[in-house]
Image (cartoon, rainbow, N blue to C red; front, top):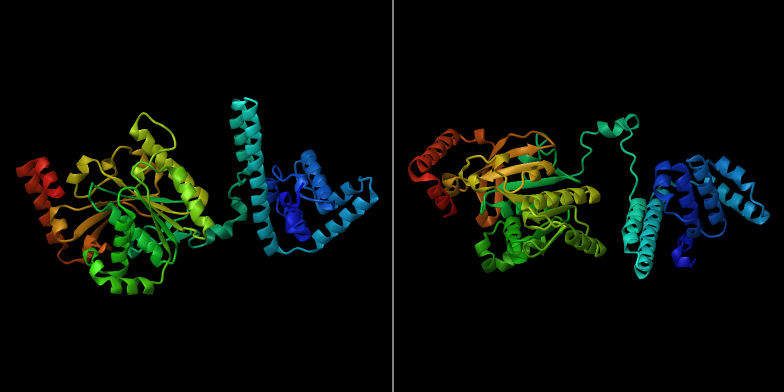
Length: 456
């Protein structure tokens, strides 16, 4: 095998570390044993790996150093046997844990790449031989081998990990009340999905900008996908959110906007637009892989919004497709361990609700079953006129749900802030005004007029 096709290109020490990692880390050995071919090593290292693999096939466990030494005695060639013994002695005597961790990552990536390359080459030959039915099983077999084997949480050995105050790695929302221990415990965590639900034209995109801004403030890199608004429009909302300058005044205050953006000490932001219903999870994956290749590693993904995506499968019912989209997003979030925020639209009856519940979710209730956190945003006529609203935590796997916050909502500067309803002296009066306003509309003008008024 050519040098670039084996571990030889990494050097003798690297091959030592790979063997060492397999002998002292059983989990790593289980991950790599099926995809690490002897030909990836060279010389005496190849012989040692053959001994290790043969022992594993016979006893279903990796050998100890002593077992390897005993097996090496069965080798007929004195020179090869003695060379192997020297290497085993080197490996056993020289352990550097930090180097081992790096070598494990490189070796695993190398073996998985080679496994997939071989599967693709085999598929080409199968296609030439008109054996199309054998292609899928070949690819599936390769994927089965390359996926990392995680045997799970070793309960009695990992009390210390469970005892940590917060083992979740989170990205803040930038809304302190929501990020508190009672609710999100610091923010949305890696592998989790959060959703904001509101009526049509109800401010969903502004909420997603706020959540992206929260990540930027915390210093993490954010990728914001938009399937409805343009990249420029989303960018202008971030401009206003970061600088505090109203959206309509950004162009007239270019120099000040430029200065404040340069002074902003936070993460990086990529905004990517896809036409409505053109993007599926594979397009998102491909784009993120390209970002990573360029050195941009997002720690937060914003999707504005998932209902405007396509599934990778065809469905007769839109409801089934939406459920599939959210399940695919869930799987991807867990795979790359990055939180995802998205939004969803209420059904028509959500327009008439003072507080929007889960029953008002449009098209597919299954969306609510997939996400970890779901908040709803509602505004009646009185609240719209006074830049107010209500945020209801409808579902929360992380902390408390059923909580209602007041919202200061200023779309002109893309600003959202939460407040405790009981913190304002006028709240009871406000509540009475809201109830009386709704009663008047319902009793005298009817639902259609209410909807028309709210849209206006």
